[in-house]
Image 1 (cartoon, protein in one colour):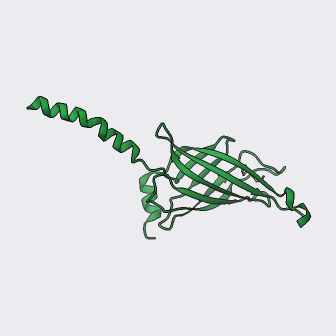
Image 2 (spheres, rainbow, N blue to C red):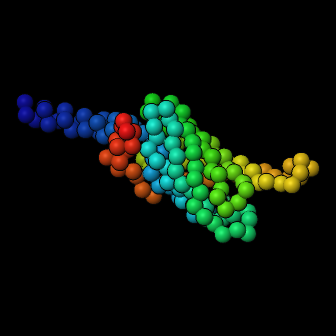
Image 3 (cartoon, helix red, strand yellow):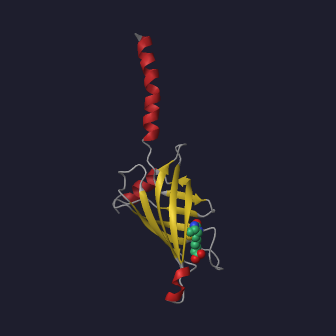
Length: 160
Ligand code: BTN
């Protein structure tokens, strides 16, 4: 009898493990780095899906000194999706440009979170005639540096 119980438990173990790993949600909050070496930190995502944060780019299209810049964004269907879509805007403090990012938060094959994004960088130009050269486009992939701890996210989600 005891042998049967142990045998059944051994059979069930891989199912339990599989269940927990595929249930893991990709969470935007925390610190991320992309392949250029840029870093960003995203605050807790609020009940409406809104979030804010900061972005330190590793590169610039200008000759200005790089400074940390604020970002604001929103996640679609907060807490219902395991791999949610999102968008955010960075309003650069050290240039007259803005960048909009859109992307999706994925769980990769190793169970690690990655953000696959596309961006448009809009530069200020002198006149409509220069509009053709005002927008750059590209992609960035972000991996997690640090996860925001649960206490912090409960505090910033909860009533103030
Ligand atoms: C500017 O040069 O006017 C502002 C900085 C732009 C940095 C861009 S945004 C898209 C790409 N991804 C990054 O992490 N940095 C560059």
